[in-house]
Image (tube, rainbow, N blue to C red; front, side):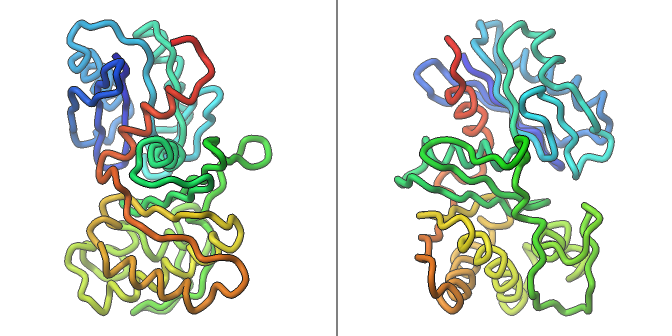
Length: 284
């Protein structure tokens, strides 16, 4: 079987897939604050979900920044997880190939491979506790200079907010898109979770997110723009319509992408771990 890990700032999920790529089992737990507790829990859950069956390979999704080649992770929203040699730990423990990438990259791969749409150029955006994106070109993850992960969430935008700026992002910069639209930002700015936003407040979020996606769409010119993550799925059609309005009003040269919600729902990163394994040129 294949094992997929989704390591998030608030939750961790572990799933097992059969060799015919069927999801056969999964577990979900709250993410421990402690690095040692988190690693021990992921190891325990991997053993549990495998149920004694042989594991072919393990794919993992984690928040950035990370070094996908060395398999070293330092998720921005997990302060105690810095320079964690995740690949080495799991390969030593389970003795099988292990691959890890930024969760938005793996989610983009999952949408490309398993999503209910066809596109040669697909831009995936996740909006949840934090925000990020991944861009797929002809089935391959787009990477920047020196394998850097492009950070769509850390661009500056003209925003509409009930408070005056500047807004400092967790990355240290001012007025990043993530700092005004992600779940953590919503709690700070509006004083409540996204689930309690009024329609007018959702319109502000959609406007702000639309400005950032307009920039990304102008630069990357994707065919389809897929939104995933708990906050995006919760915003639903109202969020999509607000984004489409911004794109309609402002994209005059580059063709507008189709904007849709993830067809994989809350399991995008879990399928992403599997897609990451399948994308590797190894003999499985």
